[in-house]
Length: 564
Ligand code: ATP
Ligand code: MG
Ligand code: MG
Ligand code: MG
Image (cartoon, rainbow, N blue to C red; front, side, top):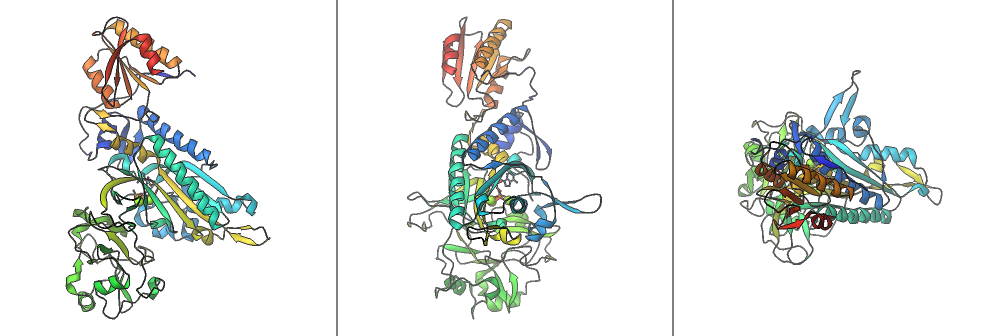
């Protein structure tokens, strides 16, 4: 099938020599300089013609692989009523990250950050019998999250494109299967995209549920840290490096309500109580004094009474994390205290903090104690202790080999939600025996727009972008480097390539020097560059591999045959 020729002379693309002043990460710099995207507001981006092509290629790959596992594409609204989110508690739980708005009658709405509630209601309406299940539904849609720090270009947008899917099964084995299907589809998606990634054990976070894994793409610009075992296949987000949390007597982990600190609740005794290995650092530690929560590694809902704290903890083990840390120590504290109080705060691994140290904080960024913060609503209390491997070289929980720590970008996340949402909406279907069966769910996300940035992070050199073939905005970038004769040759080669189904971008701009055209071609990162120039003999063109830099001169017919 004939492909189209995109002519640079008519294409809306304005390349920039210099990095945008506000750009911190490579993908941000290169995607703006290459004219792929343009900032519209903080964390809100416009996709220009070349960028839209790349984005559409990512979407196509995601769509093909979702269709291949039998998932059905739908499109639900982004503008959503409040009630379903109130039913699950997420209207409040989501905190300041949720875009809330009113209609003209004063009704409450939100812009969907993720769609578990709405999909659960859809299936409740459409599926009534076990025969209607299992079902997997997906959409590729715009999501909204009022991120505290929308830095890093399209890596972290406040408006972004996500592929989200939801599975509905009657039995746990069915959920395990839907999860496995997604896991395999994600592997194919990220392989086809050309992303280097690791599948990492993860925590469920705001989604709730049990098993969850993240697909992390190693990159310096990443905001996640993962522990990777060089000897076995163990890999985990450091937020989730999991050691079994259970009291030493082997009984079940008590629920928060039941957790009363032991008689002398020093960090050491708590650590022993939890069977936390010596190599680990406690974080998100819930601290109760006299039955009152005084801290949870996040701002407390009341003033921290230091006398009480010190009466219960060995003072040396208590480090107050000051308000300024939220702003000034991104290496230590991830999160933010905003005008509405707490937004999720996570303590990052910090090798300078001794193992066994707990952090207790009670202040917001202004140094005063956060008002109106309610345990359970504004921060999670269901997991009262998290364990983080803090140092490179700590033993792998599987095999004991020293772990490596690396930065990475979260490009996908899969969850076994279980019955949390089905319970909230009484999602039952009639079972085989005629009795209602509660449905079990999974939810699965791919950062579609973020993947474009992750690709730019992983596939670039000092000259610009180097797109993998399947996502590149074109297959060949033809450069007309000379006078009218070369432009004519470039256009004719382009037409011949397009007729053979090759996607061509041709730089036919008049009055632009060959040097500028070469620089732009390197910046835009199309995999193959074909130069119709004056230096080569008549009827001969130069082919250049953008990634390796290898060049060869070939007669036109041979060059075309080689590309096609
Ligand atoms: P992060 O930890 O980076 O904030 P998340 O864990 O909040 O991401 P999920 O709720 O798991 O994100 O959403 C599924 C996927 O959507 C993520 O794996 C990521 O690829 C993508 N995503 C999430 N937030 C953003 C964002 N602000 N901009 C672009 N993509 C995002
Ligand atoms: Mg997030
Ligand atoms: Mg995450
Ligand atoms: Mg996630």
